[in-house]
Image (cartoon, rainbow, N blue to C red; front, side, top):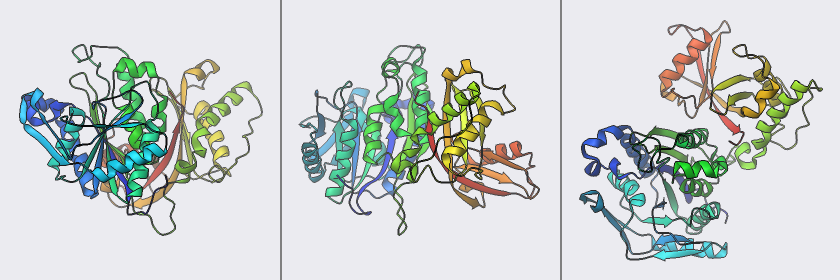
Length: 461
């Protein structure tokens, strides 16, 4: 199931909610409460169509299901309307991609994945809502809609790999849409009733999407997913597996829950053309060697608390032997900051030693907090950000606070540093202002600005 040429296979993936109220003909006056989500849906749809895919694949959690098998809508055309939502004139009609369906079935059979074909049905709203926005962005091409197996069954990762292999086999440029809403129980008037812990799923899920750490979605507590009554995680896992967990170009476009249901819109992946000789993904994402860094950071703090010799273990593997800056962040389970320290310019010989050092600084030398006590450790989550791709920029328009961290500095040595993904920082202008404040730099002072990307690794919740 290896991918084919750079001109084929999976070129993009997005997460789009499927609440019918997002469609203006359905939402009517109430639609004003979800205007942010509607704007984000239009942006996501425009992003997908701008990639010029040959086929769009939609993973719908509301399509018909059978135990132990994934379904494919198999009629020549994919059609449906919002009739049950009192908007029969809002319709979608798109050609099905029969060759891709056949390729998916063949790849699934070869990989031991069961499939079945769905005939003579109208599209469900899990497919209709994203496709309505995609049609509005100009999409009229071949489309495939897949359904999931039962909630307590496995195979989501395998399905994603099957889709990628089928696209590669046909040399087809394919974009994937993961359709899903988050918690349905955020408020007392929510469709599924209220649960006081439901919001935690949305917070964890969106944090992982912001970080591009899609593998960790599968480790979200199943009981929390159940009380949230969500249907976004499974379809997102399929899309993430199809792009090999690559988060290149990822960006959260919006999140809100005005009717007690969490709506999140995000770009999960955009394939960038490779320069000659360039690897398809960063070493961290390709090898996952950095996945153990949060545990290493915890071990460093535990070792220091016991008074044991503070000597980091030896580094093994190409990635861990790299010399890069590292930031270690400690957070309580509720997300509150407990300590943070790091280096843009590395001071140690490899990532293991850099992480070990900075974990201890974050735990015991962050002047904003008292030193971490032994009793706190079980309640803390460790996050490790490995710095790479530092580059100069000339305007705030080149900033993206969800994708890039930033450094602003002056000739006399003052500087402010921010990691990506900080809540409440929505624009490059906001990010720049906060970095200047941190560095004690006035807005009109001469300064230089750089941005950087990170490989983010975190303790599982």
